[in-house]
Amino acid sequence: MVASAYIYKPMTDNEADNKATNRALAFHVAWLLDPLVYGDYSIEMRHYLGTKLPVFSSEEKILIKNSTDFIGLNHYTTWFVKDCLNSNCTCMESDVLCTHGENRAIRGYVLITGQKDGAYIGDQMGMPGVYVVPQGMEDIVDYVNKRYNNLPIFVTENGYGSNENQEEYDMDQDRIRITYHKAYLASLARSIRYLSLVIITRSN
Image 1: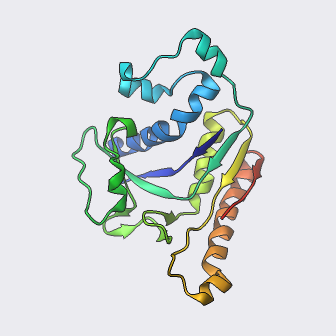
Image 2: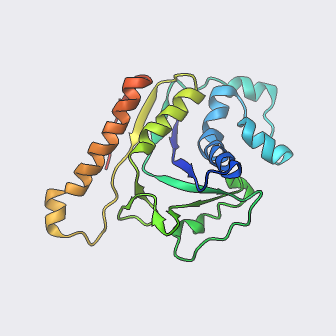
């Protein structure tokens, strides 16, 4: 099973935004993986959505629990998160991530953005709303490793999305992509060194 897994950073240091960060991970990554490892939706989703979530039968829980031998991760970027349970969430028109409607229940009542105080969380890639934040690779592997008790992790996708108007020299030398992969692989290497073995297949 492969999860498209982003990392989220709190917009501020307040408790609400820190909780929103954990909620965003639970509503995105754990939504998919918790049933396959633990046989049910994440505790966080059950807490905030209650009876809105489907209920697995006892037979279904037995069938899906521990039904994966490894976890596949697609990781590209990191975003800021703002709590929308206790705060008003209004997106800036210039923020392409607002089209995700992140303040809805299905997304954990959080707003996701790449901007904070007018600055981006990292250098923008060619794809709108996707940023270069190498630390996110180490952070997502750490999160998944701890939450799922050292299940083997395969990084199935990671890469740099180029601008379609890239100059010929940049396409030939590809220095930006080289720098990107060097930084993300260094971040992944720290995870391998300090956490557990990670087997990698790469694309892009």
